[in-house]
Image (cartoon, rainbow, N blue to C red; front, side):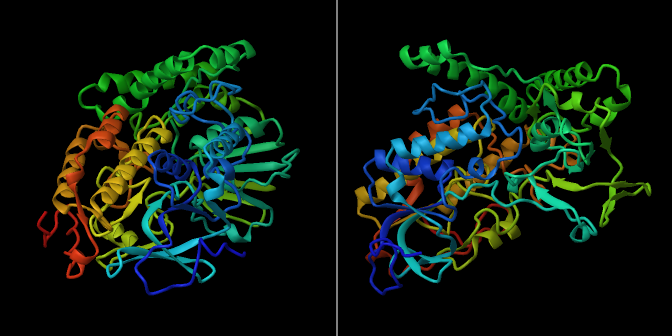
Length: 535
């Protein structure tokens, strides 16, 4: 692809960056960061997107039944409410169109270069710029990098013997083909997470036989979903504040259910118990005459250990004559079907993998190499020493670098809330650097360490460390045994901190004054630094 000369050039030996800010990724977080930066007067922005359109997860996922799992009033930008959702829980294609509409309305499309993959970024101490290597071998210089690659971008494939020998169609839900026809097919679905809960009821009526292979059951609550009538959409458009008021109500409900129950488990275990009772009631109401399935479909771990979901027909699907729930572990995939450990083989035509995405595995967040001023690959450091970042956004040793979905960044209610908070935070850093005439911004090690220790202290109150979560097989957890996906905080606290945290928590340096800087050593794995730099 031919790139504009102003945007990408060959490596050169001056100190001037090609762009002040390069955002990597044009999903929700990349678009949100660009909107905030432009609103704050930062104009020299380039967005690199490896696909051919915006939308990220909502662009890529097109499996039957895909929809948001919290209300659309909450799952959207607070500054750009949509009066035209078709349902309370909007289908996925409407979220995809929403991202496109927002991108167009706020003038972000001209900033984006599509079909460009970033493979590596290295911070150059001599010039205080990031040297960004592209998939086609060219190089780009940026003063600041915003990593907005998202978390759910790399499908997680199951490690099953013989899967490469299967002669039928093998489909991961993240790569659903538009022309797939399951009519009269024998279908197997592996996985019973949130994706499967949406998918299974949609395909059960089409397949001749549907076998669902469950390793870990999921908590499923009733879904208060309804179509939104035209008169209500008209009111949203004509009555100022009505939709904001409704958003406030759904925010409060989501915060109570998805956040408070998880992060304040020790203080309010009754809230989790209440949610668990609601989940059990939902199961039994949908399958009143199938007591043989109740135990199999009831989680043995606490509500909140992994993300719960909502459905009014998932459990009911297992009452169909053509649907079988298989809980015996899989032994191998054969050329024509699946054999379980009890020796039984089931023949299938199509194998669907609802096995989710990689999250905090090395090479996924971020999805490209990041070499900081410490000459350490960020992915290697996190993998070896625990995932950690100040406010889920910045890391010592990686100046001028902001990762939108960093460790402990995600707020349990809505991805959009995290995006808005982190966009405010990073914009403040960049604007403060410009105000001071600084060319380098780096979180102070002592501030970062204090924050990380506080996060670990807060984790002691959460459901993750207190309610049998080891049985959940949750993507919230990493190989260290930590749960770095969710921030143990309310969204109100997160947004307040983003707007008001002291900028003196960061070290701002000018290029000349930094010439003799020698970076200190990184954390020793406990969140402290052996060789501290003096603030």
